[in-house]
Length: 465
Image (cartoon, rainbow, N blue to C red; front, side, top):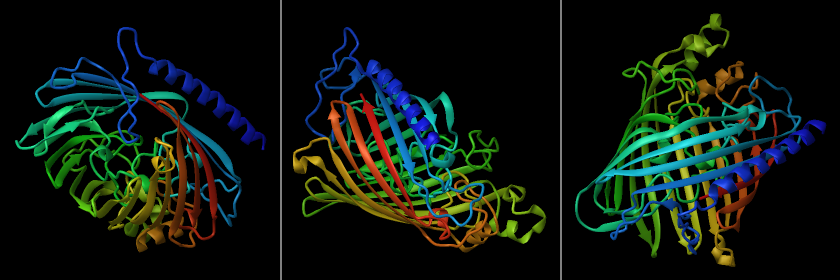
């Protein structure tokens, strides 16, 4: 109890400091005027921008965001624990992130963007013990003191192909203007691969929507990223009125869930392609996205590790350049005004070491999202979602024999699919400020029927400008 009270006091102090810094950054600068908040809850919040020309082409912009999440779980049943287990005694942890974004228009169709990220804190049990991890803002690279990096630095070139025009809104990674619906977009630099691929209107961003990893992304996609979720690469997107085709190739980390890139660029890479089909059903918009990926990295093999007693279940001793292949389906559908549904399915071959994201080979998610306009609360959102994660047979045998992965490793395993339910209510408390209450229930954490179930309670404060 003393440890819990100490953590709570520390969190309150940090969230107060973070909120003060964000508030100071969000005040309109002298000589510049921030636009009035929009009445549309789905529209991006106003930014401090450069002068707009007569045709409303934005030359530069500036955005900031601050997100503070505190989560805790009470003690739960555990027959045993291992090196990567969730602490069964209960704990309270918090994370803080602060981003400064800037964008500038370079020439016709070209934009450059930079994102400076500051982060601090840890996920529950240092981000271990649950595959559908409950905090999408938590990294394995936690820190007690604030740390900072350039998270994104990229160039985007849009090549218009003619035809009908559409407006582009101002947001953290885009400049407002107009572009052809039919267009080719090229992106080069350091980004989050999730900026482009596997997006979903209702379950995509842990800063404003569901917090669980399994609900913000396809966990069976070991998407190219460093420990903080960013990586260097190239992507191309061909957009037409009813569909978009995307593809990209990105670098991979040198070690599992590491920061350093593998310098053997022809041997280590992650390739991905996605086809998005947009449609309307009974005058309600929807989309379905089909994703395929193939990674190559210096990964260990579950089968080779199990077959060689000399390595003593240390999968790092079996590493060689190997492949991992997987697929995904991502769907969203507006059911009625202010009500939307979403679902994801994911599969990977599950033969080689989890390298980037999570120890998940199969995943299925489903959920609903309700906008507060339906009950007179514009800017509010209520969400309900569920997820099931599973792994391949050699992956099960590896964990049962005492192996460890990115998030899993209890020293033994009584296998059962990991099952997750999450619900949250996100409320607009002031212009630019939202707060949320969140509850998650996890059965068979890290696929282990000998541990749990676990209830996880969370609160979130989010400021953006």
